[in-house]
Image (cartoon, rainbow, N blue to C red):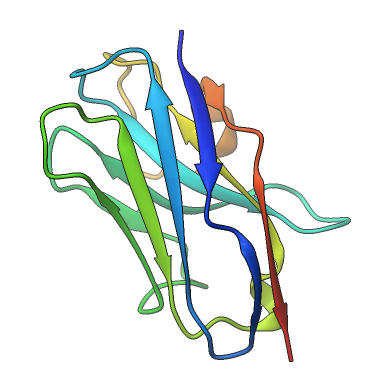
Length: 131
């Protein structure tokens, strides 16, 4: 089992930046896919960025490419990921969730940003961008 805890959300004006953190417990030292998702009111949950903690693979939604960066701690624990968000716009306003795939699960091309790929979820952190 894994528990995920997000932090770093808040309110910012358009053009500003925020950095989200996700601390996971469980499956320590195991390589796995971890991702960031978001859900705005009245909309479906969408994938924002994903990273494989055992290598350098990352994926981004087209809407955030060039503005958001997903990263992980440079250690062997493989349980902490970050989402650096720059040039924020009001359209980025949403609850942001951290998620993880059970280690050893094959994640095919295109699946890393699909919510139903992920087994474990955090409670979410609110990001509000004002114009």
